[in-house]
Length: 423
Image 1 (tube, one colour):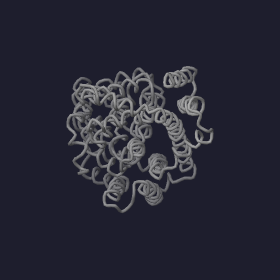
Image 2 (cartoon, rainbow, N blue to C red):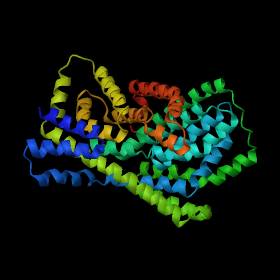
Image 3 (tube, rainbow, N blue to C red):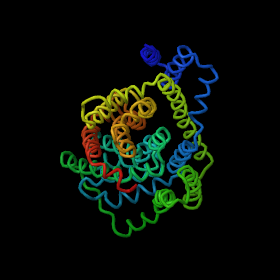
Image 4 (cartoon, rainbow, N blue to C red):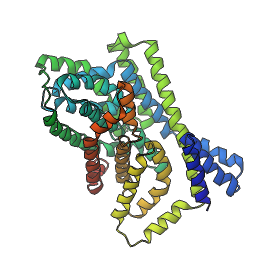
């Protein structure tokens, strides 16, 4: 009955348009204070507990590094090299979009920033060459989600903090799955290219390719420095995030002085602060709600119930992932993580699944949620930036969304992709 009342409060506030973090807070607070009789100080302290984490400090720094890469012009240097390298091949421009999202995702960890930065450069070129508007926007909207699998990933940081996993391990686990998903998207794009039959971009000569490589080299080195530093134990993921910010400021000042302006830097800080505030508020509300569930032993009871079922573990795992995808049609990825992980994680571990492997396929499901209508955040970001109808972006995303689902199923049944670099 207590659970039911809490869910009714949560859904009621969502229906009237209240923010998700407030709906979670009020439902969780009602259970803790109103039904369990905990002191109000204990209830409020959950907000401090939620954000008092060294791991979570990496989020604002990585977001800031990605925004600085875009606003200070260094991202465009990197994208120029990729389009020169593969743009002339059949399906080259969609492939360039995917590869750009892979690399830019490794710089920012933000899907929204990746979609805007890559889309602003690649989509106009694709349209000029004769690619359909749907395919041009669909490939960018979908491959932009790679920033959540390719480290440094905000979702990996959140998952690690909620399940007490090592962030560096989660980062390493996401590399091969991210590259595999990128490969699947590129193959899909090449197949679809034969339908549009666009023009082939004029092949860049060797001099132009080499020139653009050195032009974008400072940006291309950033993922190597960050991930290499984490893997070698030179700095922690949180320290790596701070190093990323300093590195971007340094290379921007040295190599791109014309865009190194106070206005652009302030814009990056403001954007990062807004996004961080949203993430932290969601985290606070979700921790309050999950704490209420913990007090009334919901996760423990679910784990006991599931473990007593005479059903294969893989069916339960697929059911959880299916639930993620359904939730993704109506909620953003972060609220899904915050609400469900405290409930499903103990069950998954009890079934004998590797927490790292589960984290990777969970993030893959969150990638899917970002392009599933009606609440696919990547669809709306791209639609708003290009002043295009959401339905146009959604239609173009369908083939790539199917490819993303297929890739996720492969990751479920081939845990080697997730664990090979961490063992």
